[in-house]
Image (cartoon, rainbow, N blue to C red; front, side, top):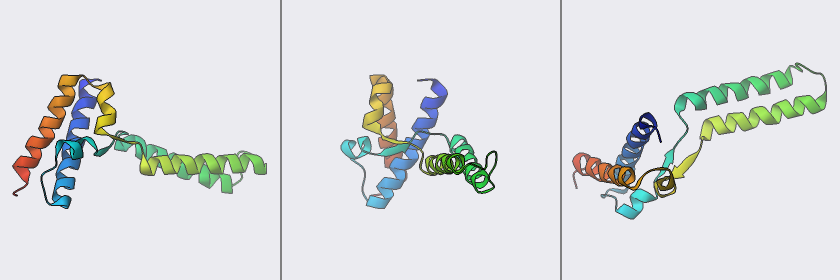
Amino acid sequence: MNPKRAERLQRTAIRKGIRTSKKLHHALTRKEILNLKIQIVPAAVRILLAIGGILLISVSFAAWPSESNAIQGLEFLSGLLLLLFGIFGIRRTLSGMADQMSYEAFDLLVEGIFSAIGNTIDL
């Protein structure tokens, strides 16, 4: 995993951990941290996919580039899938992402979340 992606993942995981901890009104346990679902698709990519989906849906109603109903239906379905993927993205649990990271990096990530929660939440 490249360092830039790991850093972005760490920031996202820490924010998610802090929000979840505040919502639950207690410091998260290690098991709760490992079950956090983190968005792994960058926001810029999701925005582009959603815009592409909207464009495909629009051109399917405008009958471009073909008058065929089959082509229009395919454009509409493709646009709908792109739009949904852009809206929801891909979320994985931290425990599911452990395979992609070295043990030391993953342990540092979890410890960083613990530390951030401890520093921001007054329990």
